[in-house]
Image (cartoon, rainbow, N blue to C red; front, side, top):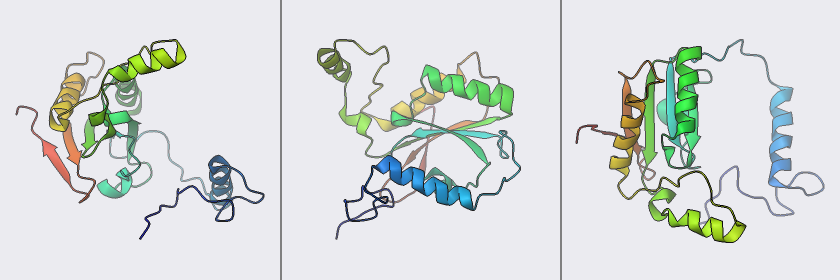
Length: 185
């Protein structure tokens, strides 16, 4: 049995926008249907639960469903690996200092693609395009240790005034369960 998702790439004859088109065309068409029934929920940008969630961009993670969240409950910051980079610190700083968040939840997951990459990826890119990326790949071998590193980066950032409620987890992509990572282990 082939597994598909609602975002599976349609074939030319299957679920494609009128006249063919791209996946982006499909998304824009879906947005038009959404907007036709949309009503302003009357919210502002401040999350109701005063929490920011930093997680991997992996398509298997449905964070709102997995955490029982509704629209407006949290800020969600996603990148490859859910790694706390300078840009994540930037977003968290704005989230805390201007939009009232106080708690931070970090979520990595089993079977992450960053476990199979190395910093050699940057060398490969440089050889291919003639320019070395300024960013680090941030690959890792031990997901728990990477969660600990991310917690440490958050807790020691001078820009974040609220670092007393920072917790890290590993999401199991096979079971859907979160496992908390002990920061001291």
